[in-house]
Amino acid sequence: MGADTSSTSLQRTPLYELHVALGAKMVPFAGYEMPVQYPLGVLKEHLHTRDKAGLFDVSHMGQAVLVAADGSHATVAAALEALVPADILNLGLGQQRYTQLLNADGGILDDLMVCRSPDAKDDGGLMLIVNAACKHADYAHISKHLPADVTLTPMPERALLALQGPQAAEVLADRVRGAAAMAFMTARSSEFDKVIDLHISRSGYTGEDGYELSMPAKDAATVWKALLADPRVQPIGLGARDSLRLEAGLCLYGHDIDETTSPIEAGLAWSIQKRRRIEGGFPGAARIQDEIANGPRRRRVGIKPEGRAPAREGAEVVALLGDPIGAVTSGGFGPTVNGPVAMGYVAASYAAPGTPVNLMVRGKALPALVATMPFAPHRYARKI
Image (cartoon, rainbow, N blue to C red):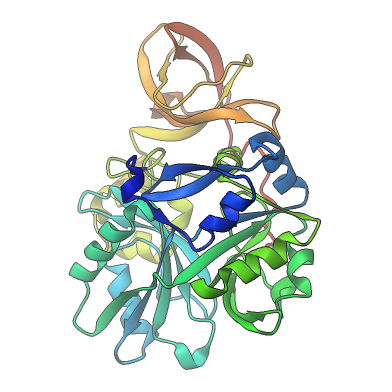
């Protein structure tokens, strides 16, 4: 992810001191000092999130607003649709959508969340959440390609927390008005304990039900402490965040997707709505439309090693006769699955679930099967 290694150049989120006080192990990540784990440990943090509710500091992520001078959603949607393949025009008030910034070849510069303002009086604006390691490049790329009447404004003064897990809704019910009634991938303006202004979305990157809470950085410590005072909530670090999203079959930018991969190769065709597939009008549209119609040459797949040894990023995937057919992009131990799981790219002819392959690990061929994802079922609150 391009994390800095020099401690003198690392930034800190507003919650840095609280992480240290909780005994977190801090590591460089995407230019920040971030907690990789707390004393509970990665395995128990992962399982706690699957069972109850885990609290993540994701304030290193980039938050920005895209605003049209005329206050028109159509204007701001058209500006963003020139850069991403998702249907932004037909986003409803308070609706959120996952998409990708694309280069001229249809490769992925970053993946991001886009949310239309939940408040009609603020329409004509979109909130963007982008990856930490890419945010400055993203802002420059977007700004360079905007028309004169649309402006991008980063919001470094805001913090972002994620509360994930099957008890997240119950935890927030008494603290955030309307939270429990929200559906997956919707957002609203609210308050925490009737005092702190929030932008809250029912979303996250663990495969579990949950929320992301955006607030002024000055209020982040108050919200963090209040949520951790609930016995159902534990702080969760980057280690468990990674194993949770891997089990959920979710891409990590810079690993499973990058400028060399298209959304179709990456199994993200679902994020390109029908109107955009037909009309195009986004970077790399010709390639992506061709891959939708005729199939890509390679595909991102789940991979399940047959033994207990995990296959890590970079491990070569070979056919049973020894021909190289791809590589692992993410891999490790899946605590919920209680075994090793991985994902990667293979030639399209080997992408069918159940296809036997070998993984080259330390010079040895380890048997594995191409598997369907997610490895752990998604439990999003799609209907309330």
